[in-house]
Length: 443
Image (cartoon, rainbow, N blue to C red; front, side):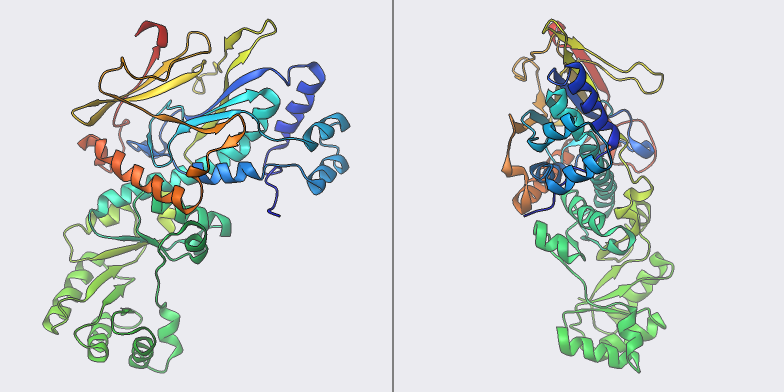
């Protein structure tokens, strides 16, 4: 039996539920929305990631004996609320952007519909997953754009908590990285894994040459040798002497990389190892990768920067109630009005306007009442952005597991081609396209 995810939440969600059960509002139908008011770090676009993980975690959002015992023992909620939670299963509907999709300020990334009791307690889990994974994916996509056709490998597990490391590897792969060093990510999500040896391998042996010979005996001449433990030029010379000119690759993890890469390329070519590839792995981020665009580098390995969102470890998404049924059964749009933290009330449909295949506008239509058509037929040159992820409690398994990851990756690489040229710049700026809110009744 898989572990419950039901207590991966904040206490106030259950105390709100408890109070709503007492005053009779727990059964009111509601619409919650997960969105970002702004893009972190002046980024020009965001990347949706974590959706498939969230759906799998939702399957395990059950209050078992241990969870219920904790709630009773700690007196978190009343006995009546504990009894309610014994049978909790999310029975509502979730629509949202496909995983791998681009998002902008105000994009309704997820829309959760159900009773207040059903939907309110999903807030923390949804935000925890989507904020982390989308932050990593957004940074990874920027790095992928900077790298161009050169492959990227994620190798930042040691810079993140153990479960976050696996999630980060998944998000980075969706956003354009080609491999990960994390074996659990490979097992769970079908991501290609990579890795050969660290400096400890060279230091273990009496000589650098001995370390190289042993690695080649084990892995063959196609392996990649780490050449900067001592002196890089000496390491390159030894690597080619031991492996021959068919050596697969060398890795550089230190130094002024543009200069070092050029020197290593010249040395390899002079030694006849013209096909030996150069991989660099020294504290890279999107800016360092872009600075190496003209250097003779064949591949990049990125650690700390990608798993921490390249300085912005959260996407800043929020989860807000935007519509509810009133006491008379009619729908009411609701919104927060606090300065700097306002939200748009009402259930929404989202489309991306395209001009000759290039994104120009994020159109978010707000329902006059509650019902709104998601048919883009009369919205010229637009692409609908929302799909059904959960239908009255039934989770669409197509978004989960390794297949869901592959689908999300393909979708991301496809929709990234819609970005206008200005979106590809790394400098801080306004979002690449504006978000336009429109009354659905007044197109």
